[in-house]
Amino acid sequence: MTTIETRILEVLRLLETEVASVPRPDLRPRLRELDELHGGLPSDADPELRHFLQRRSYEKARLLLEDRADEIQRGGCTRHRH
Image (cartoon, rainbow, N blue to C red; front, side, top):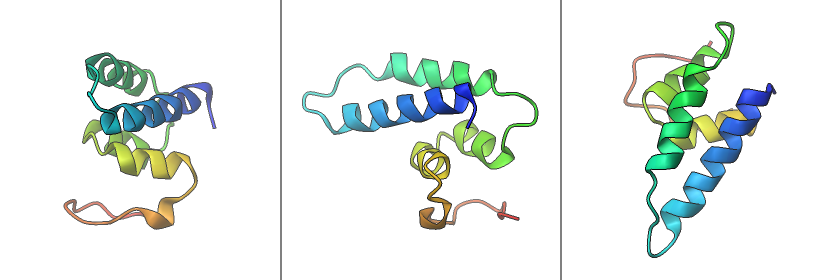
């Protein structure tokens, strides 16, 4: 896992924790950071990770980075894993 992918996973986990907290904090800084990290991915980065981040499918991106792709619920998209 690259340094950027590691940071994406950290931010996704933080975001998930913050979404569940009451009261919910301002999530915009985390979302901005994810957008910046997504933009900084190298051209050879996993296309599925890019897809999930672009679509803001953060749970799917987290599962992919945690090497738990078999748990990703498929649907709502015409792309298929190869």
